[in-house]
Image (cartoon, rainbow, N blue to C red; front, side):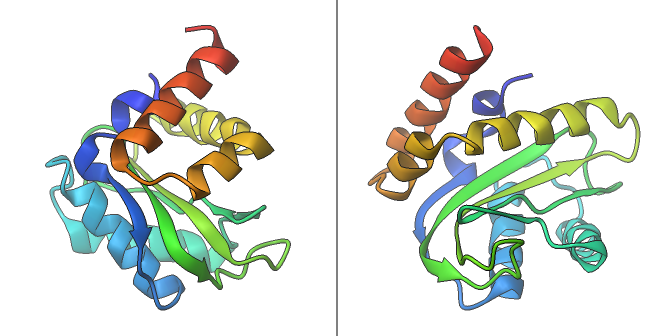
Length: 156
């Protein structure tokens, strides 16, 4: 499965305003819900918030990948936002988050969820891609950047 297949137009936002981590998580769940694949938005948010209690998903370099496994979805669901300004996310490197994903997966099987987390992490290790995403002006541009990056990195 490819990230660019999960990120529909309605699941991507550019210049998303967010006051703080909680606000950003709610807005990411709202974006994911627009895909039509989240049956219980409150349950999805709860799963992500519980995962955040274990350890921050702010992985550094201005990136966060909040995620959760929940009965609120039947298949993998993802959303992505470029924040309007940096959001304090308690990231490992202390940097504010500008690039935020949400990944929701069903409780079983775990494999697809873990593989997609790995794929997102590998993509976000690319400094050039992060810079282009932060400067993206449209949803179409964001989606094209992910499509091109996946083709380059994963030989699709």
